[in-house]
Length: 128
Image (cartoon, rainbow, N blue to C red):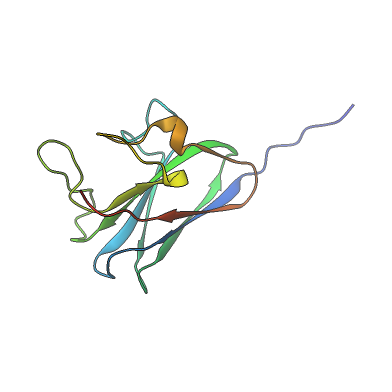
């Protein structure tokens, strides 16, 4: 019979490449449920941009299923600027480089599992 200790939490590093410039900052939103995806982030982190790349680390997160949305906060106002119709004005991307068709990506295309310290890479897409 095996004994189970407390599950260890993990660190998740999100690296983003192909940013258009080094203006502003990169913000990453971590989601831990399908219901909250693109609505209520579980955690948010920001990072300066250097050489058109940036990376953030979420520390001590429980093992499980997640999605990440990243955006290039060019004007550093702390939010993803959108047009009236809801389309993003600033460059945005999702985990697994998931893309939406006529709207945001689907949760199932962007989800991944964290079982230990992990690193994911996201390539920034251009603003619409």
